[in-house]
Image (cartoon, rainbow, N blue to C red; front, top):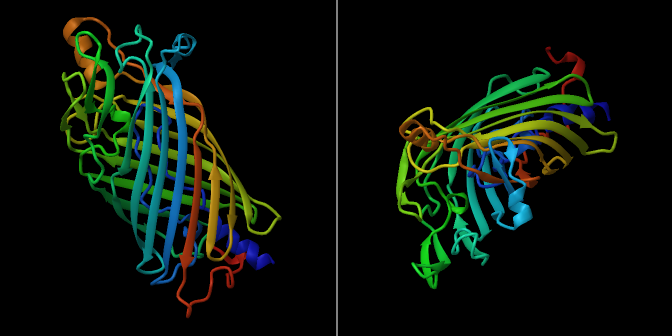
Length: 379
């Protein structure tokens, strides 16, 4: 039993470390991770040729409008708020080249609906309709490397990088109502940036993940992720025809604590996360239409793990939501002298569920069947 607990610390420590993250609203963060959703293997005794398949499901409904950190409560009271319902399903594959290096592939699918008044004749008309989008999103391919030999220390860190391909539709169209001078026409046009399946640009990410086990029951985990999108705009005009969609960077930071229960295979997690879209990109230009901003959330979760199967459920709850001033807002402010600051809708919470199964080489000993003594691990 003591050896089992010790393996749980090293084999499960990062089960909740890097779940895929999506902005809870109109700030269009389309995903976060190094493509590795197989958290049960992080920091554990991986074997060359091991393979895992996972799926991650996420859902949120955004409906609260913010300009800066101030909520515009009148939008809900007046019934003029925008409501986004977004569903995400990621299929992930991981292949272990050795016990420290693994490659990963993430194939994401999305389904969105966006309900509004202003896009269908204006708020004053009071005629609410929905636009929808669905399909394949932007595929990601990555590789990660653990800096220390697994199970040699009670802490470890992995660095990773990856490529994001513009496989998702970034000019998805749907029907808009009450269009034209007399507001009596329907029109097929591009949907809002927040529900476009893709962003239209090649990107690359850098990420860091790590853990530190302080005891058989208590482990700290952390992850940092940044997606660079060098392309400035994707060539698609917004529905008003004034500017093109921007291809923005994305970032996320997560820090939390994992506590292993006396109930075999179960652990609980509590942490905080920051995820967002910056106003300006680190590489390339920042022009075009984007809704930058960030969400700071408290992130509780529960996990269950066996030697081959891992399951996690997290429900991050938003504490701070900030729709920051965009690059375009700043340009208009500088040119006209009139302060411009757009708004965005955010959700109250995000539902995030992950299931992963690992296929191990039969001639290798399971990480849950053999372990070094926790007291012998180097600190």
